[in-house]
Structures are given as structure tokens and as C-alpha cells.
Length: 491
View 1 (cartoon, rainbow, N blue to C red):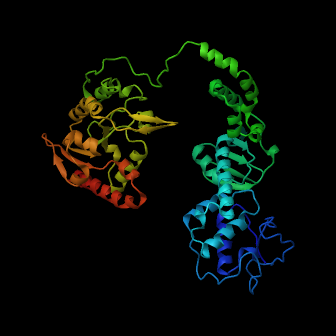
View 2: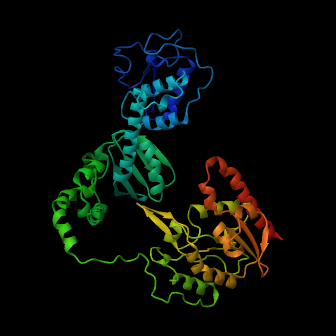
View 3: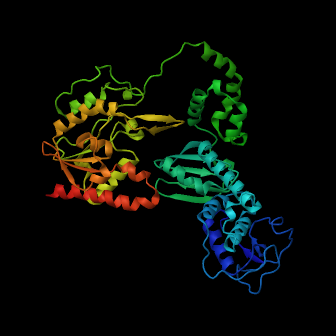
């Protein structure tokens, strides 16, 4: 028997290193004892196995077992990416047999069963997928049900949370909380381990006890108020609620103390909603009641004010707000995109979402300061289709583009740029005609009647939508177009 001792049972890198050594030594799964695993069932009812003192230190042929010994793997084994993705989740499962089961899957993949993971009915594969689903669910629950309590130390406020996950998911979930709460110091304590963020670095430590976390603070009242206000009695389904928020989490969540009363009173509250007069929802950013198209005052500020009040088409109704252009009034370059996206609609600024961030990185790479550019869009309101919690971009039609055309012309008249960079077909066709094809005509300058030089290229969102294999070449072509603009500015 070969004994493998893992310092951290949820560390995939440690398991991979040990498994690689076992494969190279041709040690079959039945001849490996993983530390801390109750493997009796997996190893055929074996009891009191002989244990080597040093991992992989013994020599000689592997003993009899469920898998016959085979020739040693001559080099580091290659396995499908699907296996590594599966193992990343399974390694956090609470089952002590997980290391042995993963090694058995790995052994079978390396020794001829290359399509094993596609066999959903195979017992090993089925167990691994069930374990991965359980870990994924636990990760989701941890993100949803962790509740921080505020305490203070010499440096100020610290936020502590106690959570009791069924599986060892904290190392995989902690980076999510770093991204979400990067600006505050916090600790998440669980029985198995703890995670601490000091504002600069994430540290994983030993497990804790429930008494190490605070019992409550003033934030709990806010949680209760928030939960009471979002609780919808008309959509109450107790079984579904308990399935989504299992009772084992309730003891550490302040708002759950309200659930019995909210469930009890749901019927009466729902009747009150039925009897009440209908209400019209108020827009988050109500637009001023002005004529459908106010004439812009002098200067870009006047154009921006007029854009914000535009009612020339119906796009203003569902949108949060208009998104006018942004940049210096003496900019030599106007950048014209197509229309605002979700993040631009919420912020009221152009090119702040994923496509805008990609564009900013590309400008920096070629040596153009985005702060010197005036950035705007052909259409000034976000057009979208709701899909659950998300708002999916929908292309503005010809009528909506025509309704916004005066604002683009007013920006051009006020700015009088020397160069215009059009990002995407909608922007290019607004200046260069409906038949203009960006992919065919990119890479050269197109003069307007007033002498303004126009360069057209793809929209950055086009690069984000491409398959990964096509992105490097497309990105290099995009950078080449931006270098043309840089070279023109340097003359």
C-alpha cells in the first residue's frame, strides 16, 4: 500500500502532485490509501491496510486490487480539461473518499478510457458529477447567505461573518468576497478554516468556533427592514423558499426571524394589494417635461442638456437616462460608437462597460490618451430586451437612429474635430452612407465634404463576441487601426 498525506485536503494542486507521482510509479487505485479517507467501500471492504511510512518510497510490484498494475506512465499524463474542471469542484466535497475516487477516474482516463467522462451512467462519473453539483450549490449558498457583523479594532471597523458550509468551499468562494468587498476589512469564519481580507491581501487560516464571531450588530436591523420590504406575499411558495434557503442556514441570518410572521400574514397582505388602487412605477431618473426636441444652446453643454431632454423617439421611456458625449471641447478626435449599453445607461457616461474598458486598454497600448478624445454614440438611449434580471442589448432601428441624428450633427458642428473614429457599422454608416461595409473598408481614411478625415473600424464589443481562437488576430487588426489614428495625430 502507498500512503498519501495531504496537508490541505481541499488543495487541488497537492492532490495533482501526488496523483502524478502515483501514475508515474504505476500504482493502481486499489493500492493507494489517501490520508483521512474512510475508503473501505471503495477498496472492496479492505481493513487495516499496510501503510508505507513515506509516500512513494517503497519499491516492488503493486499488490492485487480492483485494477491490475500496468506499465508506468513515461511522462506527465495528459487529461481532458473537463476532468480538471470537475476535480476543482469535487476536491472541496465533504466525502472523505473524494481523493481516491478522483484518482480512480484519473487512472482510467490515462489507461485507455479517454471518453470516460461522457459516460453519464458510469458509477464513478455519476458520483463525481453529483459531488460537483453539490459543491457548486454550496458555493452559491455561501455567496447568498453570508452575513457580516461589524466590530472595531485599533484600525477601525472590521466585519466578521460566521458560516457553516456543508463542503469545504471557502478557498474557492473567498476571492468573490474580495471582489465584492474590496474596500473593507473582513473575516469569514467556518469550522474547517477561515478567510481574512486586510484590504490588500487575502489570508486563509485555521477553522474557528461559533463563539469567535459576534452575535449581532446594528446592521441586523437593516437586513430585517430590507427583507421585510422585498418579501412578496403574492409570490409566496413556502416549499420553494425553504428549498432555495434551507433551514440549516437560518440560525446565522438575522432576517429569518421575520419569516414565520411574514408567512402567517401573507394572505392578508396579498388581499390588501388586490384591494389597493393601481400605481404607476416612477422612473429611477425622471426626465424633465420638455418639448420632444429642444433646440440646443450654444456649446457642447447646451447639446448635452438637449440630449438629456430628448423625446424624439420612444427609447427614452424604458431607459434610465440619456447618455450624451463626453470629452474636451477642443478635442481633435471625435470617437463615435453605436449606442449605450447597460452600464452606460446606469452611469450616464459613454464607454464605461466591458467594451469601453477594452477600448481604453487598446488606446493605452498604442499610446493614445483617452482623456484627449471626445467620445459619443450615434444613439443616445439604451435599447434593450429584459431577460430575467438582465437587460440584453437590442440594435436601434432606422427610425430611432434618425431621431438621434440631429444630436450627432450638433456635436460635430460644435466640436469641429479634425479626425473622426467610427466604431462599428452603425456609426460608420451614419457618416459614410448606408452601404458602407466596415470590414471591407477599414484600414484607410475617408474624407467628408468639410475635410474631416474619418477612420472606421469594428466596435470593441465585436471583439468580445468572437470565439477565443479568433480574438488574437482580430484584436491585432483593431490595434493596427488605432495606430493609424495615432500616426495621424503625430503629424
